[in-house]
Length: 195
View 1 (tube, rainbow, N blue to C red):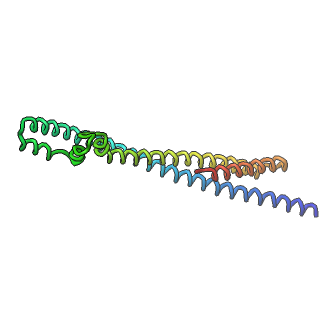
View 2 (tube, helix red, strand yellow):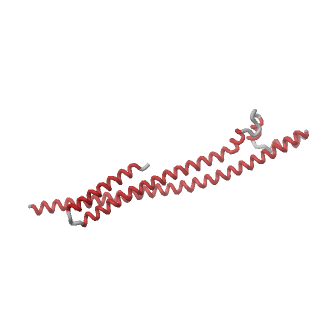
View 3 (cartoon, rainbow, N blue to C red):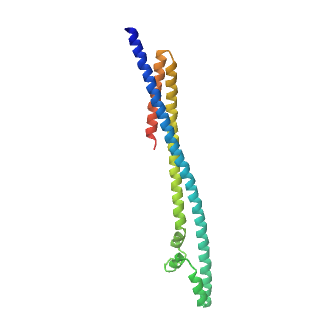
């Protein structure tokens, strides 16, 4: 009878080891999968953000060129107006951007802060979008790293469980299994803390 109890006890231990191996394997694989997803999203968003920021820089250059054109057209308009040449003055005035013309009607104009804000608004907006996407990519990269730490915990637990399955000493077997359960708990806690 005692032999049957020993076999039953050993059988329960073996089943416990098998269950731990299965749980830790699934946890390792799922954490690695989530880490990969976060890393993939991070890479995509990082490179997209860099593209948007490059576009914003191009838009800033474009706005600078438009501002220089407005300033030159205004200088030509002003000189033609001083000379009394209304036809030339109208020609140069008609070449001004809508923002420059609107700035003439403001008490702080022409070429006040609002003018420059309007001229740079689209470039600033795109730059903001790029920076926001880069920050999102950074957060996703951090989440990927945190999932990798969970993978490490579960992989160590899996390794300890594997060793527990081949050790003949009952005390060592339970020590390794206990350590595996701790690693399992750490992995689950780490996974749940991501985000």
